[in-house]
Each structure stands twice: as C-alpha cells, then as structure tokens.
Image (cartoon, rainbow, N blue to C red; front, side):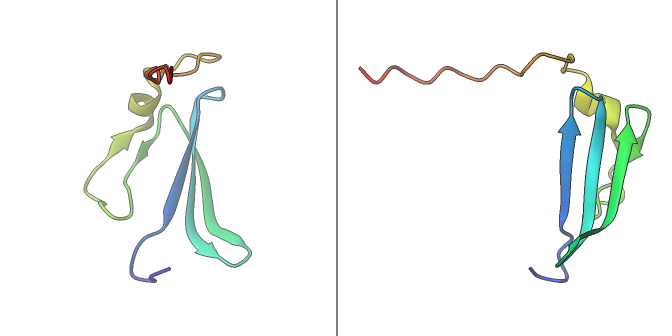
Length: 76
C-alpha cells in the first residue's frame, strides 16, 4: 500500500443503522475503528472538506430489506 494514500474501509450496517469506519491499516488490523450512528457526520480522509451525513447513506434502507439489483439476462 502506498503510505501517502489514505486507506479507509466503510461498512454500512443496515440492520443496526450505523457505519463502521476502519482507518490506518497495520499488519495486525486497523489502528482506528469507529462506529458512527445516523446522527453523525463523516469527513473522508481524502476529502476532508466533504461532509457526509450517515442518515443520507441509510435513508434508502429499511432493516430486513435488501436493495434490489438489476436482473441478469436469461442465458437461454
């Protein structure tokens, strides 16, 4: 990994209505781990002036419902 590039991983937990953020990877895992609720705002490391409201990421999701995906064409 390039040390100059921020390496963040976000996991959106639709069931628990939160976002898990993992930053600063190390051989044993991530140095920084956060769990943000719907009321929180996140500023990505690569774009610190860009604020993202967690509720905006979750607004389409209802607990227990999976997002729909386009159907794949029949292969007949």
